[in-house]
Image (cartoon, rainbow, N blue to C red; front, top):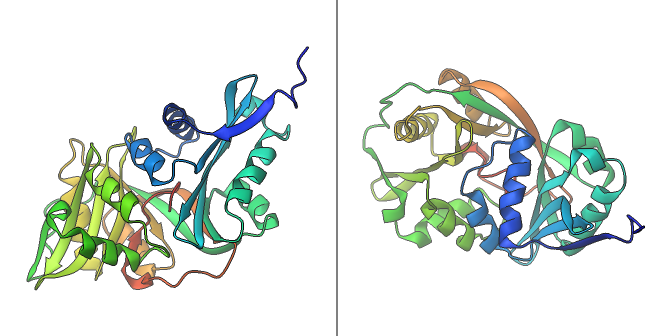
Amino acid sequence: MPNPVEDFEITAASAEDIVTLGAWAHEEGWNPGLTDGAVFFPTDPGGFLIGRLGGAPVTSVSVVRYGPDHGFLGLYLTRPHLRGQGYGLRTWQAGTARLAGRNVGLDGVPAQQDNYRRSGFRTCWSNARYEGTPPPDIAPPPGTSLIDARTVPFGRLAAYDRRFFPAPRDGFLAAWITAPGRTALAAVRDGELQGLGVVRACRAASRIGPLYAASPQVAAALVSALAATLPEGTVAVDAPDVNPAAVRLAGELGLTPSFDTARMYTGPEPVIDRAGYYGITSLELG
């Protein structure tokens, strides 16, 4: 009879495995985007690990490298019937070894946060997912226009994103705004970017992320306009409490909390534009 320990191996995921991870994330209630995997995989093809028992996938973790000194960890999963047997821990150890020496971020669900703290992560802020149907036809501030973000010179978009994320991620961002099943809008005033929002189709409420804005009025207009592109108009935004205006706005738009995570880092909390940060991009890749 095969030894279960010896029959367990951790390898880099294939593109096909990424589809499986999306299904696992859905089972956990995380509501991933329908085409997220097509963006995730090319961002760092070696950054997704799968643990296989007898050849069958049973554990996972994503450990994506950004730039020379940042990393983001997500999709830490073990199939329910195998939890508590050490397979997940071995996968975690392999993943964190890949990010050694980097400041690593993650968005942790409440049940895992104590485990993450024991592994050297500390909470920097909390995110609350707010869901619902926002009011229609919210106008942006006078002089501000909402346009297709794909028409904005990409260098400007990448520089804007860099204000809210601690490392360059041009390849990820380019794929994120152009993947199927999503709409990306930019707010522009006098030729300057005032906001960016992307909505993507999910199995449940369509998720908006990122959501950046120069003011609550710009953020509200983006949410309203993005929701208007959807058949049902129901959206979800993961609002960081590091920007109290984001949390207030979610309530003012009639959205209700449904899910919590904590943004945690192994090193110093990155310096970002907190006042303009209204919604995180992704629980899996930051």
